[in-house]
Length: 66
Image 1: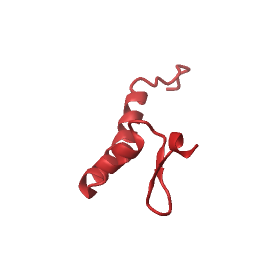
Image 2: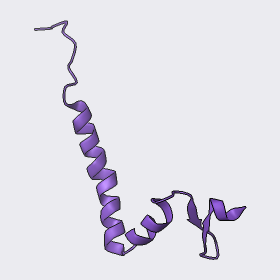
Image 3: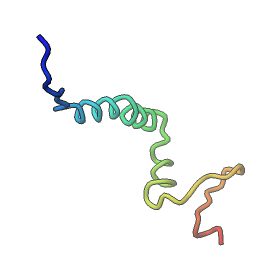
């Protein structure tokens, strides 16, 4: 029996975000924690977000570049 009722997407957003979290975010956090690189990642990117490592393995920040 065919119906002209539209499909409902109730719960789709939560399901989508759950899949994204467990497929991308959670494995990245586990890798950072298990390899011991979480602390370095936190110090270089999260407090300010403007630091990186150059080819000589030196920490370079935007405000120190000028």
